[in-house]
Length: 210
Length: 210
Image (cartoon, rainbow over all chains, first blue to last red; front, top):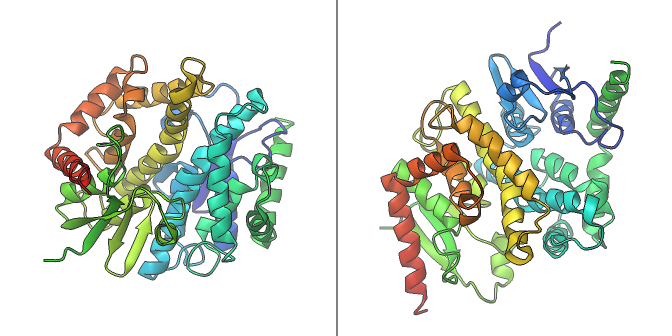
C-alpha cells in the first residue's frame, strides 16, 4: 500500500546527528496523530539541483502530501496539524495558543539555541550568545513551572516542536532549568516519541550499507 | 469606533530600532489586507508581570482579536492571513507554498541573520556566523533570481515577512545579492508598506513626550 504522506530525509547521516535530524519531527507528529506515512531518501552527499528544487537550502526534511510538497519542518508540522485535532485543537483559542507556541519554538527559542550550539562547537566557553540563550530558557522555564503543556491545557504540536528543540545536549547541559527538564522528560516518554525515534535510528543504520 | 484588532507595541523605543519593531509586520499585514486595527502600548521600561503574562519573553508585539490574544509576530501573521486571501491564497498548493516560505523566513533566514547581527554589534569583523549567514542568503538569492515573489506567483504574507527580515542594514551591507536587493526594493515600494512604516514612526515620535 502507498501511504498518502511521504517524509523525505537523507539516506544517511554521521552518528552525531542521528536521532536529531528534523524528519524526526514529522515522524513524531504522524505517530501521535495516527497518520500513515512512508519515508524516502535523498543523498546526503552530493546534493544536486533536484534536491535544491525541493529544499532551497539543501536540507531535509520535506513532506509530500498528494500533489503538494512542503519544506521547513515547522511548516510541515502546521500542515499535518490541520489533519488532526490531536495535534492542534479546533477551537479558536486553543488553535491560537498552539500557533503562538509553535512559532515561539521556531523563532524565540530555536533562533537563539541553534546558533548558540553552532558557535559552541568551535568556540568553547567564549560564546557571545550564552547570555541571550540562558535568558530565553529562564523565561521559558518560568512558564513551564506553571503548566505541564504549553497550549490549550494538553499536549499539542507546539509541545512536540518545543520539546524537540529543547532535548538537545546543549540545552540539557545548560544550567538549572528544572521545569524544562521535566517537560522534556514528559514529552520524550510518550510512546509516539519512541516509535518515531526508533524509526529514524533504524533508517540511518540501514543507510550505513548504502 | 473600536476596531476588532488591537496591535500592542511599546510606548517608546530608542531611535535605532524605530521602523524595525515587529509590530510593523502586523501593521503592514493589516494595511495590505484592508483590516481595521488600533495600536495600543505597553511600557518599554519596567516590563512587569502583566506584560510577561501576555508575552512570556517580555517582547512585542502581541495581537488582540476579540477574546483571543496571540504573541509571536509570525503567529500573528498566520492568524491574520486566515482573514484575508490577499495575504494567503486559499488553494491547497498556494497555501502550502505561503506557509513554507513564511516559516523559512522565521527559521532558515532570521534564525541565522538575527544572531549574526546581534554578534556583529560587539564583535566587528570576527563573526562566527558570517559564513553560515552568507550561505543562506546566497541560496535565497538564487531562488529570488528566478521569481518576483516567493509563493503562489504573487505577493503573500511570506513576502511581507521575508522582506521585513531582509530589509535590515546588516543584510543590506552584506555582499552582492542583487536578487535580494531588488526583492526588498519591490516589497518596500508597496503603498501598504509606507502606511505601516509611517504609522510606526509617528507612534514612537509621539512616545518621546510620554
